[in-house]
Image (cartoon, rainbow, N blue to C red; front, side, top):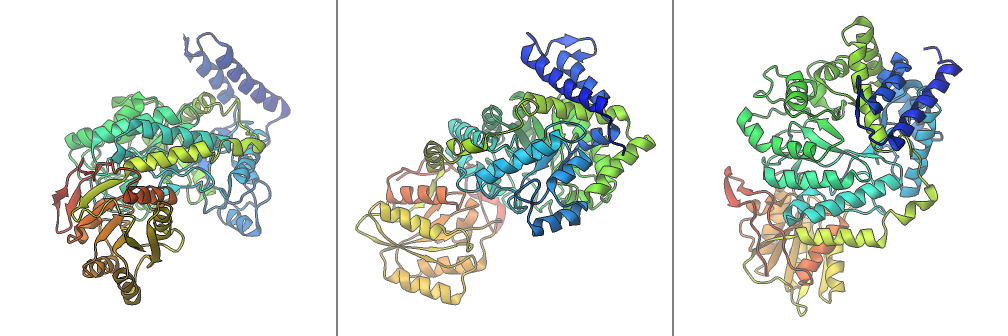
Length: 600
């Protein structure tokens, strides 16, 4: 494409400045004017003077590799070359003019807060010096808990399900507000959170503890609170519409089919998204799921006009940005292929296309669809307008850069860390205490054993917390799949202690056979055993002889510290199950209902 001439470049700079000034100075910036609001009229003038290539670029959110926008490592250059044929994120931005960039730990983007701030400033500099002069939406998935791209020293909250267990909307607001503040401080202005799925399928392999729970009213209350509180700082994104909570397979590797009736969808999955829209949600992410009762065509919701335009736009009256879930997931790629998916998504009602696996192919497929008349220019401009509105509302156009020297004044402060600990304390749920062994007596010797993944060691963290509370505790991690030798060692150690705390973790519904064997062997010693489930709370169904059982919903340090406090009795267990615990033999049989939880 020919480079825009200098007069056009100057016009775009002036137009952006004019739109910003209009919003900041107008007495009633949203006041209707012929053809739309004053703001929209100015933004439409900006769009009018963009090239087609620049307009289409605004519809994409891309990943890129490297901790720097201009100076990545050789390994990161190789990944950028593989995906884009370019070396750096800055070159990708200058060629394709994307509307947004998403950051990942695995892409070497989020190593520490200071580095992230430098990266985002570099990305924004590249965008502003490109043809559009438009700053970027810079996003990530900071749901907290098991999905958090920014790790320590950024503040770590325990995630959605333990907040749901607390039944405390103040905690939901605290987690969303602090997360938003810290993201904004490092230059991330959009968070793909909150998860608004109602996880009522215990066998769901991809949502689970990412959800606030299985009760639509609970999820609606928590998610909409998170929306209001996070959007003081960043754009929030409700996901995954029309609802991923009843899936029984993973949309990363297949296409889940949600076999609800339309009436059940309205009762179960819709309420959180309705509440999010009422709360002013900035963007909504689609799900790569098939819902035959809403669209019998067999298409994933991401590509479904009846779902995205018919229901979300027309029935639910949502006019914000709709962004796809990642287009490199198999759930959306199976039926049509990578060239057709971006075009079909836009035809369905999507505004932004997230992470297509072959970026140049996707970008040119959209351009070709416009040039052939399959997609109209007005349809493209409709989505560009929504994207620019979002950038303007969230101060992306006015304040794209951050102060790299000030990051530590916001990220991981003692006040934020203390708030996260309080939130984690409130979610710990006591299910059984038949032996009345909890709280642990200071006179007892305690073994803490069980699950770890070689990176996270909740056994050690819990033991350290008990020790600091004056309880003699020893840690003996057994790994994620304990073998016979590890089981024998744990049993021998248990016999030398008064009480054993065994950590279990099922990432799916089923607790692994090796963890079941370890737990049953410890119970067989005759010594009191406290089973602690540190992800999904369903583990007790697989060890029914466990007489003492606690659920924390997360295995990170903040939840391990709270577990130790509850076990020691310095904090009371106040959480209530936000999901039901079923019988493994019959998932329709409930062992412990939603709302169950006991105290000491």
